[in-house]
Image 1 (cartoon, rainbow, N blue to C red):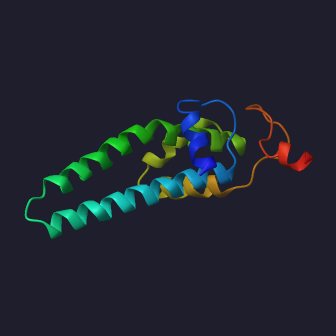
Image 2 (cartoon, helix red, strand yellow):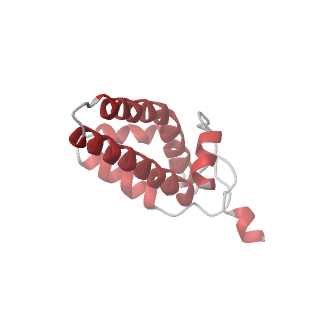
Length: 129
């Protein structure tokens, strides 16, 4: 949970580096939150005759997804910085199929050891301890 909240604390911080764990924990929590709320919403839409509550939950999902766009972009840019790539490479995801796969591979790569032009290695504090 701490990794998820860390991304929200750095809401629009595109500078610096993000570890794989920070990126993937944020992605996991986003997926679980949307999945749970979507499941509740679907259940409400099918279980009741009055579907107003289900539509309200669907609206909450939309609001959450809109709120999470900037932190998601920011953590992805910081993740690309961690492997020594430009943050502008996040735009490669706009290329159908292959772009998303390329971005996936880049987010799975290990950090550059030591500091790079984007800052110190975020794993450095853990290695000293």
